[in-house]
Image 1 (cartoon, rainbow, N blue to C red):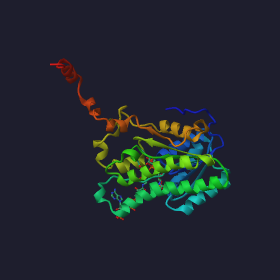
Image 2: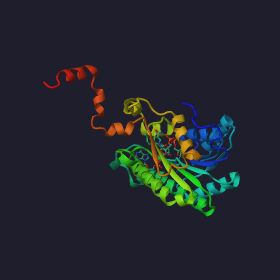
Image 3: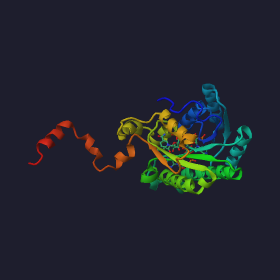
Image 4: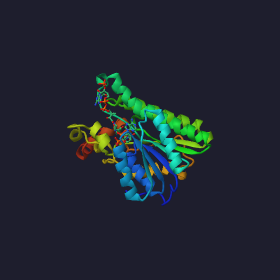
Amino acid sequence: MEGMLKPGSLKDKTIIITGGGTGLGRSMGKYFLELGANLVITSRKKDVLDKSAEELMKETGGKVLAVACDVRKYEEIENVIKVTASTFGPIHGVLNNAAGNFISPTERLSHRAFDIIVDIVLKGTYYTTLAAGKHWITNKQPGVFLNIVTTYAWTGSGYVVPSACSKAGVLALTRSLAVEWAKYKIRSNAIAPGPFPTEGAWSRLLPGELASKFDPAQRVPLKRVGEHQELANLAAYLMSDYSAYVNGEVITIDGGEWLRSGGEFSDLEHIPEHMWDMLEKSRGK
Ligand code: HXC
Ligand code: NAP
C-alpha cells in the first residue's frame, strides 16, 4: 500500500490525465504529484475537476491544472495540449483514463447508447492520442502514452459489449502505435485493471441489489479487490524513465481474476477438503 518509486522519479515531468478528477485517474495523479510531476486533469465536469485540483495540491504540494474537456471533441483536446504547453512547457506523458460504461443486455441497447460508450472510450482515446502524438512529433519531443483498458479487452464480455469493443480497439491502438511511433521516441503501453472500487464504476456496474449479490472479490483468486496505490505504483513506473524499454505492453493487475475465469477446472476450489479425501481414497478402485 506504499509508494514504490524513489522520490523525484517523475520530477518536472508534465502529465495529462483524462478523467483525472475522480476514481482511479485521481489516485494515479496523486501519486504522480508525490513523485514530483506537474499534473493536468481533464474531464467534462469543471466543478469536480476544480475541487480535486485544489485537494490534490493541498495533499501533495504539487502543481495541478484543471481544464474542462470532453474527449469526444477534438478541438477541446487540442486546447488542453495548448494550455498545458503554455503553462508547464514540454508535455511528457498522457494517461488515457476517461471512460463511460453501463451494464445492459445488448439487445436492450439503442444504437445511441452503443455510440455514447464507443465515443468516450475508443474515439476519446484515439482523439487524445492523435492530438498529443502530432504535438510531440511536430515539436520533436519524446512522449509516453499509458492507456487504461480492462481484461475483457481480449476476452470480450457480455453485458458490457460497447465497452468491450472499445477497450479492444484501445488495446490495438496501443500496440500499433508502440511500433509505428517508436521512431519518434513515443512509447505506448496499457494497464488492464481488475476490480478496483470507485464510485463511478461501482455505481454503474453494480447498481442496486447487484452490489450485494455479486461480490467482485469472490471472483479473484486472491479474494480481494485492488488497492488504488497498487495501480498507481504500476502507472508511475510505466510513465517514468525506469520503463524506457517497455513499449507495446499491456500489464494486467487483477489478482489473477481473468485467468481464473478461463481455467476449465478453476471451480474445483469449491470442492471441500472432505470430498478430496473421498476422491483420494477411491483412486484406482
Ligand atoms: C441501457 C442506457 C443506460 C443503461 C443510458 N442509456 N444508460 N441504456 N442501459 N444503463 C442510454 C440512454 O437511453 C440513451 O439512449 C443513451 O444511452 C445516452 O443516454 P444519456 O442519458 O445521455 O446517458 P447518461 O446516462 O447521461 O450518460 C451515460 C454515460 C454516463 C455518459 C456513460 O454514465 C457517464 O458519465 N459515465 C462516465 C463514468 C463511467 O461510466 N465510469 C465507469 C467506468 S468503469 P437513447 O436511445 O434513449 O437516446 C469501467 C470499468 C470496467 O469502464 C471494468 C470493471 C471491472
Ligand atoms: P470514474 O471515476 O467514473 O472515471 C471515469 C472518468 O471519465 C470520470 O472522471 C469522468 O469525468 C471521465 N469522463 C467520462 N466521460 C468523459 C468524456 N466524454 N470526456 C472526458 N472525460 C470523461 O471510474 P474509474 O473506475 O475511476 O475508471 C477509470 C478507468 O479505469 C476507466 O478507463 C475504466 O474503464 C478503467 N477501469 C476501471 C476498473 C474499476 O474496477 N474501477 C476496472 C477496469 C478498468 P466527467 O464525468 O467529469 O467527464
